[in-house]
Image (cartoon, rainbow, N blue to C red; front, side):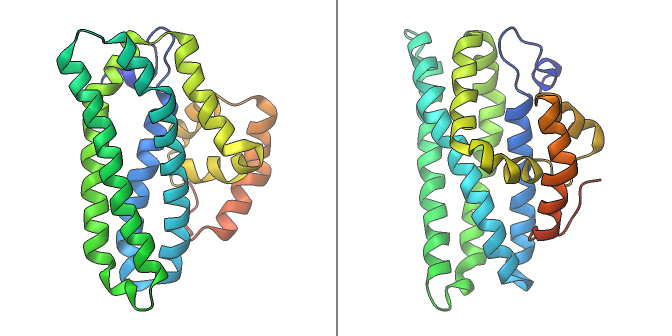
Length: 214
């Protein structure tokens, strides 16, 4: 990850939330992998959150990022091939997640979870690494502020104000204070207060992972 990407200093594009979401998804992979062996109830609850926010994130990318970037990259076949790979990786991950859903809906299906979660973890880890190495630098260099804000707005709309009460504590679960402040700085001051006083304590009381942020 470049220093520019980490700081979100590129003109018009602030990748802070993008990397925060990626970090939360990687964290959930680790927690889900552990829970599948000794706490299936925690796995089910954790999987529901993980899949919800993964879907929101990827649908917004498919609707509001890749089509805009594809138009901008006309005549650049290598870059266009990378975008096609992004979409193909989303499809592979969707199919892997659907297998987990099917196993959880089937009596005794939990026995298949180790193999299924290895598939999910491989698909997601490879995709996030690929996206961070190749797609995000293009977003920084090619998108305007208005185009980037359209992507941000779509995710915000899908989460909704009511959903934000769970999304932000989930996003920041276990995150060091400095990184948490960096994300919360993107919220209006009243919502930062609500996060600390209401959302985060409530989430921690009901979190499947029971791991309060540092």
